[in-house]
Image (tube, rainbow, N blue to C red):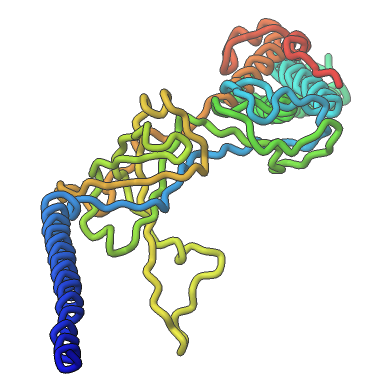
Length: 428
């Protein structure tokens, strides 16, 4: 039995080895299947991405370096003065022509009244010049009559001098009277000519003295009207820095107006992305403020004349030994659909994501047309028209019948005092 016992032990020993070999074979098979599956997935993903890129992706360029831009219209005074009223504040909507800031008008009113008085005096002085022309003409006629009489007296005395009826002394006196009459005629002619030089080839309204005084009135009236600062465009007030009682100088920024219906997007694309971009290509935009639920549709309207770094305050100095190439970005201006902008308003400075469809490369790389809708305002024109009416009223009041000969430019209006009364003076 002792011999059989050791023989049984070796026969049982190989069993664990067989059981250990089975797990190793299964693990290698699973690993191979996983690697095969992963490789297949990568191949499929690569093929899918290749198809996506070939059929769709290569026709679009996108960037999230895009921001809303717009016109920020500064409100600045044209004359110096002290602020007595502020009629608008930040975030408020104002319309074109609406008064925003009022300056003290006391000094401007005094200057306007002085200029109006000077114009009235100039009109009356010019009227006197025209009246003097008639007076000098009458004087000349009278002096010529005296000259003819003196000449006849001298001739008559010379004819009867031989009879002894007239002495030589009387003849001498007649000659002196003739010379005096001739001198008086010459003086009258010179006076008439001198007065005609001041009035010939002009009317009362176009006389230089009147025009000069009228220009002073217009200047003073504009300075008076400019004490009220209107909104030049319709938009929302921002960056108000002015305070009541502040002394302001011409050109000082007091507040800004942002017309939110005049917005666009500046999308900064890498220089390699703009290779196939053209003016007129469609653009899809998404604003971070609304998320992907709102999509804006726009068009490429132009490309900046230089990259962002070219117009920076401190341009890059690339002519150095330690130069490192940095991919530049070129601002691309994208217009927005006015209806979409009205339905979902944007603000200046908001972040956007822009995707340009570059299928159609038939457009131009640079815009070749000038602006068709220039930015302009007419809120300041009324002051000049009112000044012309005030001037015409003053001339008509002081010219009398002479004003009917040649009316001044502009319609005759109420007197200047009534015109000023029509403009309310703000109260502090």
